[in-house]
Each structure stands twice: as structure tokens, then as C-alpha cells.
Length: 124
Image 1: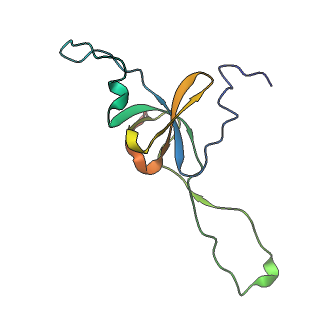
Image 2: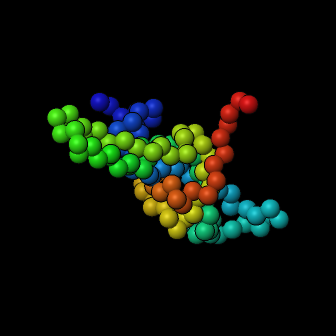
């Protein structure tokens, strides 16, 4: 399979309660017009970016049906889904994020607990 811009992230599987986020382009100028040196914005405590992929969620414990041994064991794991969805704008704590470079682009792997706020484009 040849990797193209459209399918390069399809092979990635996000695990558990984690979210893959592509950071937004940060400006190098403040509102008052001062230019910031490189790396200043990256050291901020709060970052923002778009959710690219979402993990399955929090695993739920299987119910204990000890009285019906004849049923057999079912190995399917059930998950509590995450609030984040693909395409959401996420505001998250830099402290909880792990920065990764994939296909020469920067991404963050962020646990759901580090996401402070989501902005979702929905038709009301």
C-alpha cells in the first residue's frame, strides 16, 4: 500500500483513552505587534489543535456471570466512548501531552483527562 496524504494516518491506531491531535499553526506575533522568538509558543502550558484520531475509550469491566458457566466466555471488551470526536478543536494541557513526529509532521498524543475544552462545528 502506497502512503498518500489522504491515507497516511489510516494505519495509526490510537489506544485507550488517548486522542491524536495536530497542533494549530501558532503566530509568532503578539496582539500588540511584538514578534516572539522561536519556541516561545511551544512552551506555553495550554495548547490547541484539531483532533485527528480518537481511541476507543475507557475499558469497562466485564460483568461476572459466575452462575451460568455453560454460556462460555465472551472475550469482547466494551468501552465507554470519549467525548472528543474527529475534527473537534481541542484546548489541552501541554504537561499531559506527548509530542510525536510522524511522516515529518508534528502531532500530540493526549489523554482525555488533559483536554480542557472542545469546540465542535455542528448544525444546530
